[in-house]
Length: 299
Length: 292
Image 1 (cartoon, rainbow over the protein chains, first blue to last red):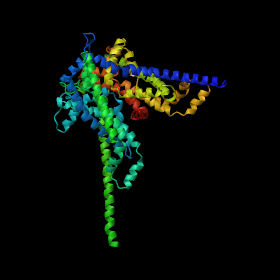
Image 2 (tube, rainbow over the protein chains, first blue to last red):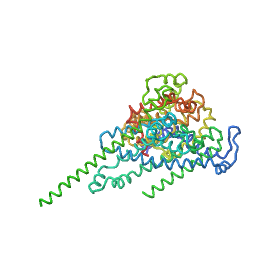
Image 3 (cartoon, rainbow over the protein chains, first blue to last red):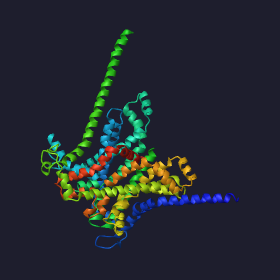
Image 4 (cartoon, chains in turn yellow, cyan):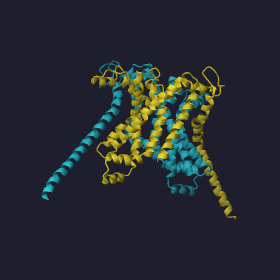
């Protein structure tokens, strides 16, 4: 007993020190996450129950912002534009980036070079990419109108017409993102053992059968990741749209985050904008949960 | 017998030849596709760079010229002299590197605690931190803005730096790394009487240099490229970061394409240089981000 007691004490003092170090090491990051990531959810909801503008102080109004939101045509329009953007952008992104990954994953000379080239847009900022494309889309001096002019097509107002603005932005978003998701898919493809394909070849399977039966099922976790991330991104698309069209022409490209930005930081309707942000948050959450559920039941 | 052979063999050869021509055609198709996509990827970029060397007159001329008629640096001189562009570059550089250094140190500490130290509530903390990855940025924007304003940080470096630091993704990746460290190294130091903090500082942190380098490139670039948050929390020209500067430039002078392309080229430069020289780190970073 007498020899055991001090040792146990020494052990516990070491344990204590480990605990203190553990909490101490976690403290700054956890505090930061609480203040700037977790806390804001509750705070946003709290603000959304108030009327708070540039001119008036914060005033409790209950759910009035939400009832106003419910009948705000602009908000519904913004959701519709966001949904349209998402419905076109996400499937194309998945198809293109998976296609690129399969393309450059082949054992052929120069494929690493193409892989490296396709990745380049990833290192550019959304602002730079958007500005560079705005220059290309320019109605008068743009490269695109010059090139289609060579084919005899009349010049188009890519970002200035209600019909073309959103598709043009989608093209830019795809151009920006495809290299990133190609790389993610490539990592997934390279995890699939070559033997699976060799076995399929011996069984006489065509390469398209092998793709459908081996590649796609084994890429499921990667695909889920890409799907969730790209959906969350596209529900919150802002930079490209703001830099290229400011939500115009008229309101043809006013996606939800643009509308939130305008309400919060241009009109300083902080309460109302928070209600919108909270509604968008709930939508994103529900869509993400549905995806996880769908993928889990199918797996 | 011989007859049968004569009939079968040429057809088999023909089939093999057909297969090999199909294969050659397929390979040509693959390369053609690759070249087209490579052009789509690179031409906009080259177009921007070539635009940055064109004069105001040349850039607004139709049909456009593919190569600037004279290589002059006039646009670059103009960008630096008409607006405080050096200040914008400094702001972006200062913010991105400070965030990267501080964030990596804090994430390494948090990750080490989660992976190697024993204390009550550790696993709950880990899952809670991971759960924050699901929180979309759009919900945090307005509350963070209000907080920054009430702290008196609006239009200061604090506003640009502090909120950019907390990031569960970095903690997660570093924790994965620390989980894989062999126990022996720590045990030796512990027997020598080193404290947990000392072991982290002397052993774990130096060992994590490769993953820290990967994350550093990734974090620096992400912060250099950040637009929306700096747009919201800064106002004065002295506090502008480069992305906000070029975007607002394009808003104010829509037709000054020669200057917009010059500013954009400058803003793209760090990313392109990092990619050129540290490609491995960048691609590794992207792959890691898909590991969740």
